[in-house]
Length: 251
Image 1 (tube, rainbow, N blue to C red):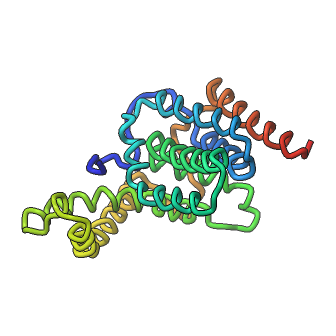
Image 2: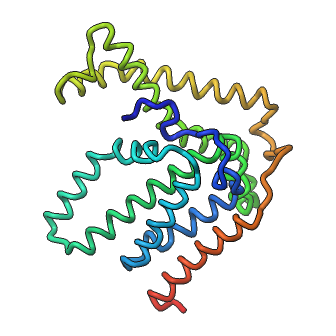
C-alpha cells in the first residue's frame, strides 16, 4: 500500500487546489484547526469532512494516495478505537473524535500533495513574517521546517525500496508474519535512515542550485497570486470559525 513514490510528497499535476496560493493554504489550515480542536458539534465536523473530501477530489491526486495515509496509521486508529470503547464514550462522541483525526490527517495530506517544497518554504516564511521583529532567521527556520515535514514521507518511500532490495537477499518483509515484518523493518532501519538523510541533503543541494540562501529572506520570481478561488476557500474557513465561536458563545 505504501509503495508509491509520491506517498506524502508533492504530486505534480494541474488542479485547482495546486493553484491556490501557499500562504492561503497555511492560513486556512490554521483557521481549520480552531473548530477542529475546540468544537464538539458533529454537524460542523461532518460539513468539514465533506469539504476535505471534495478538495481531495478537486486536487486530481489519486484517491488511493490519501487512503494510503490512513492505512499507514491503521494501528493507531485501532488503538484509539479500543481506548474509546474502554472509556465507554457515546457513539456520537467517538465519531466526532474519528472525524477530527480524519480531517487533520487529510488536510495535511492535501497540503503535502499539492504544494511543492519551494512553495512550502515560501508559505512558511510569509506566515512567519510577523515574528521577524525578533530578528529570526526565517530562511534557515523555514528550510528546517520543510526538511522535517518531508523527512517522514521520504523515509516511508525509502523504506519500501530498502525492504524490496532486502527481500532479494532473503530478508522477506512482504510474505512473512508480524514478527518477521518487525524484524525486517528493524534490520533495515539503519540503511533506511542513512539513505533518507542523503536524499534530504540532495534536496538542500537542489535549493542551492536555485540560488536559495537560507541567510536571506526568501524571494520567488514566480508567485501564485491570490485569486477568486483562494478568497472563496478562505471565506469558507472563516465561516467555520464563526460557527465555532457562536457555538461556544464568544460572540
